[in-house]
Image (cartoon, rainbow, N blue to C red):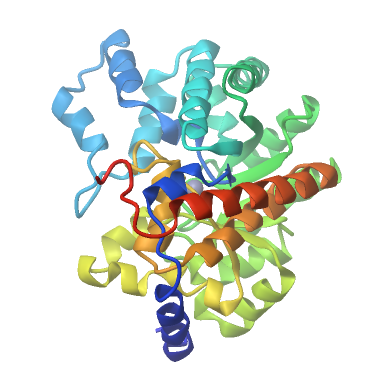
Length: 373
Ligand SMILES: [Zn+2]
């Protein structure tokens, strides 16, 4: 599949070079561009809130949320549980923000741009936009002070809530401008909610000077979603984008544009639809870089996907065969995709690259990784 021959050659070339271990992926300086705040819920925090709200959810059910079997419990179900029954105050959002950024920083993620769905927070949790925003911003500030991680917040349109709610969300964002709120995103279930439904909301965001990104081409949705995200929403970067490979001309266009595509090695859709023995061989992420698409790996919903900032990157090597040189390119893609000013971007390219070279010299080769020894 996906122009197989050229890719097979590419992958076999990569596999011959640069064996790197877990210590490398941990120490590599990284940015994260695709993570959902609610998808970072720690198990202990969720359990505490279930007890606090006296919900009839047993330990077995909570265990199932944090289990990734052959047919994992849909992550979206847990996110809705949080919005509808567990989040009760701005302090809850503050706690999640601090816990996420502390965990990310522990894996040498130096800068994180993460999604938050204001519509669910306001509509279901009953927390006002301003109060929710301030709590998250406070968490970002606390994390930067305590862990040195910088971050930007991306209010994201809950596509299941429809086009009107999307416009309303953008109005909230525009009415409360903040330097740490760099742009908007689009997430939740893509099926039946193609990007073009949100054209008005995106036009309003762009008119207000906000950056934009959107989930498109996830859930096996058609490649046309990628095309409309580009042409109608005019996104600055793209989340997932896997089905772009179904249209070679569009793939070429995405490659030529240089747009950064955030990918998620632990994405649920392919875990459910590809047979386990063929998953790594057939996952689109394996083929996107060879087609010239500038990908960047991310954790998405780290605690629910049972993945951390080290493992999301390591999977690019262990599962998809990318070598240290390719991983270095992904690192620079993350910097290019970040919504920071040009001076910061240039400085990070320089500093991260120097660190990458030093880390590689230290970790390349046969030294056992700290956790597998
Ligand atoms: Zn996502």
